[in-house]
Length: 283
Image (cartoon, rainbow, N blue to C red; front, side, top):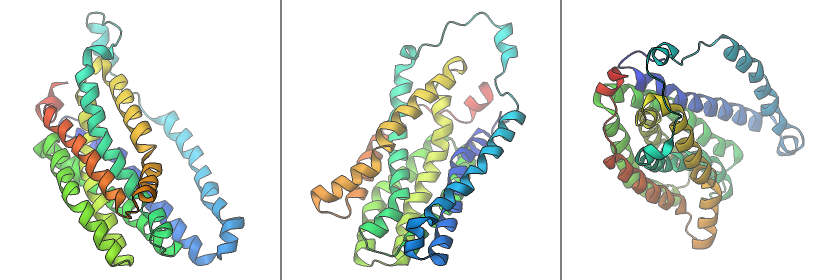
């Protein structure tokens, strides 16, 4: 649906909206911890966010009823019949896409884990811990839009690669600083590093992965890559880092997990073709 040359910016809203959701959730969480006692939170306060979230059902129904269909069927009707989509013909794109997703989804979930990490590992109060969610949400919102916009100007690969390299270098020192000086400032700084760089790299990734596939198999390709990468690596991320902390006794273990998975993504980015600019105008 995006006009030529603006796929990155339009696509970045997929990730930016996740940041907006996290920002809203963090603000609600902090507000509840300030207004309610610990006992009230345990008895009924934790239900309030679910009640507020249920309102979105009606928003979703409205959007679904009024959004336009983005599938262009006119070209398909005019062209020769196309064989059923087969991902086996695009195995390289699937593998590269999963490698790109691995780093993004792990660092995203580690950034989201910072609230639990602050409360359970660093022993900060729930109110201070929730500030990590607010920081994550705000920086994801801004970082995603910036990354998507820049990827339309300079290409997808540089915007996926260099923030990921920065994460590789900065994540462990940020965690060590947090462990040595545990306070709200270092918690916010560590979350800022994780969230902003992940979002800047993640937004163009969301656009580049479907661009790896031809149009007739694009939706299927993105679905498989995203589902496999997020389900296996994102779904297990918080369990994995908790287990790593317990087994190694190293409270900075989440940073090591981000580093290892970032290496996988860097390999994938280096092997992928540039999909921006000319590609955006071609189809």
